[in-house]
Length: 145
Image 1 (spheres, one colour):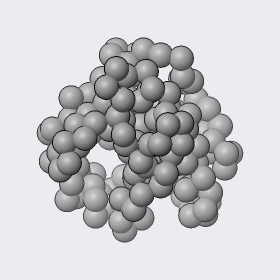
Image 2 (cartoon, rainbow, N blue to C red):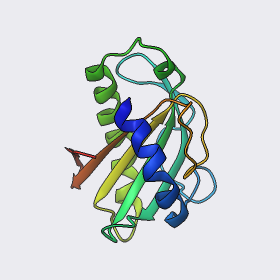
Image 3 (tube, rainbow, N blue to C red):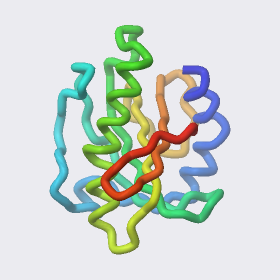
Image 4 (spheres, helix red, strand yellow):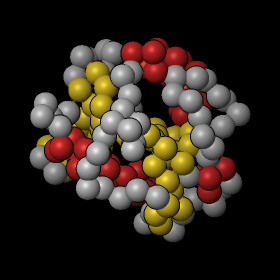
């Protein structure tokens, strides 16, 4: 939780300012699940945004999967369950979105938030978690964020 709060305060204003989002339903069209789904932990998640953007530090393309996950507001999920859900999100949305792009992104960033949050705005009162994955074909390889 501390890592997520720190990241949202330090990096999201910069990252959000450089993003060129394609919001699910407006720009990124494809054959991936939408609506509310049950993640492996049993929590309900819903796609808030799916975006392709350039990483402001490396210049590489990345898929950003932003999920509304209200159940992370409490302490009901273990770290392992949350991590499993984020790995699942990378495979469920990150890989298909990346494979649908002509210039295949090499990275996926998964963000889970307890309430809708505008991208790039620091909101320390809203619990958010982030994970980063390097893509090798259809495989998500977790990288320290």
